[in-house]
Structures are given as C-alpha cells and as structure tokens.
Image (cartoon, rainbow, N blue to C red; front, side, top):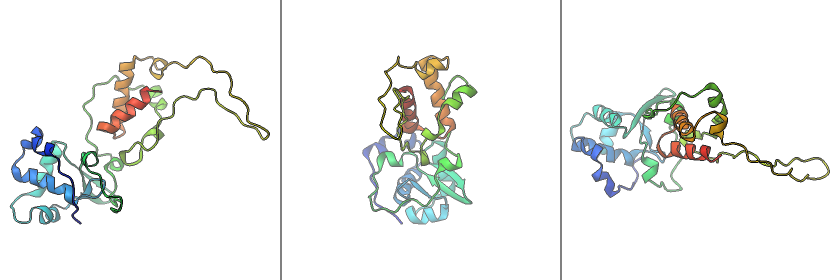
Length: 213
C-alpha cells in the first residue's frame, strides 16, 4: 500500500542520480512510497510500474538494474521471493510508529549487500576469531553496544557480594594484542564489517565501537 514519505531537497542535487533518465529518477522516488518501513518491497516490475508510473512507458526491470548499478537499490532473492531494498531509506525516513512491521526478509540475511571498496591488510584467523559475531546486529542494525573489556570483575557467593579486586594496569589496546597498528586494525575491522554485510553508517559505528575497546 502506498504511503506518504519525505522527499528532501538533496534528492534533486544528487549528481549520480542526475546521470539517469528523468523517468528512472521518478521511478526511484516512487519506490520510496511503496516500500515498507524498512525500505523493502517485492521485486515485481509490472506491479511497481502500475503503482508509480501507470501513464508512462518505461522498462521498469531495466530501470531497476540501472538503479542497482549505482547502488541506489539492491535487488535480491530470499526464501523463494525476489525483493528490492533501498539502502538510504532509514537515513531519510521516519516511519510512523503504527506502520506495520516489515514482512520481507532483509537483504543482510541473503548476503546480497554490495561489497565495500576497502583496501585492508588480510585478516588473520586469530583476529577474525577475536571479532565477536554476536556484536553484529539483526537486519543490519547495531542493537546492543559492544561491551568493553571487563575491569575488576565482581564475583558472587551465596552469602554476600565480594568487593572488586584492585584495579590493575589497563589492558593493551586490541590492535596491539594482534600485532597491528591502530590504522591497520581499523582497516581490518572495515573489511570484516563488509564481509558481514554492514555498510555505511552501520560499518562506521561497528569500527568506532570496536576501536574504543
């Protein structure tokens, strides 16, 4: 069902989008109005055309491929269905709290996120094991903060809570423990985030939190 969405002035100033024909740009704007609250919709070109360009002649399938080439959308398959995802959707939209939850599987589950252009040193097996997969979020969203190394751990028994042990010398940063410089470790984190399907702000947040440990 079409929904009201916000279209910002920057939409018309996007130089990459300006390289596309006017009807393809209009199609892209229309996709936002038929996407669900996560920026996803079914990849059904005929239905999409009827919803947003009913009076114009346009090969929507080819147009969606053009949009994907410039990374404005991601076309993917999951659980026997074909879908479209708008990566920038949640950056610019604030769906109403009562809008129904998405019933379309996320592209992160399907592993079809476009790869990041990252030049990074190889990730060793030891380093990859040290990167906690559980710190990555469901559906591409970091839902919980990455826990810093525990200091002065508190233990409990059945009678009373013991006092923390005296604070020892702070542990070395994680990149030093892995024999890397801070910049090398940051690039390795970006590569790892890309391998796990995180892009843009999500990848930056993952790297920032990991470096803070």
